[in-house]
Length: 388
Image (cartoon, rainbow, N blue to C red; front, side, top):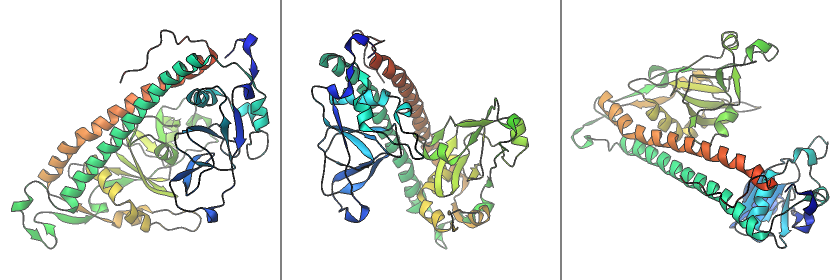
């Protein structure tokens, strides 16, 4: 809060404590989450802090804040609240999320956060009634986002289950009247990927050439865009390149609803672009066709991720080469079955995309409200919780 008349030290409102050592060899499987500066990293049979509580990183990863409802073990890379005094825990969580940790960290090679520096900050907390109202409004956004994420996970599971039912268990429509010949339904084939659909790689334009990057309009996808995405569909990326960057590199533009698969280090993570895009060289991108629609390719890749990972090689980091990927085998059903599958599953994928877009708007609104509510610039008196 920015009313200078009410500024007090942060430790007037709550107290932070450093987390506790727990070497990996001393961990015993249990029900209590082990939380590091980057989040839950394992489980243990003992706890050190009672939930609900608030945790943030003090070393390594700074700026992430976690609200833990149950008892847990905070590692020594974290700070956790051990005394909320008269403050509302969920408000403390959002307060810390609104803090700018960059100017509080040390200048060491690995960022660090001193709890004494945090404790000495001059801040203004509103009355408990207002704390609860602010926290409840922001929590309503998070709950809607969480509910949508649960629906997204359920829809993805439904799509995978239909794939398994049709193409693994072979209980596709009309299977009762279909003969099995050499282990596959009559009319089907087992083909190599090189004979199933086209695949392309990616590239990185020279970073020394500013004209390849400045005011770029072409989505250039990196593995981080996939692994950090909230769902299958990729509509936004961290970097864009120019048309000259595209033509001046080995990056190749591909159409919407292609299936991008990470092929280095993290093997087999997938994303589906909603706009024309290209990737860096850490991808194999599959181009759908009539026999192999994007819904089929995406489900096959997800289900066969362990198989794909087994074919990856490399000393420094694992990678699956395009030549190796092309030799993998995939079922090719007759066209009517492929088309029926796509027709049945595509609405699930469309609903996933709609929910992702809803979450994007909810997150943007929440992130706009957060600093204004915390600073007192926005009154909560007439502010309503969101409606999905």
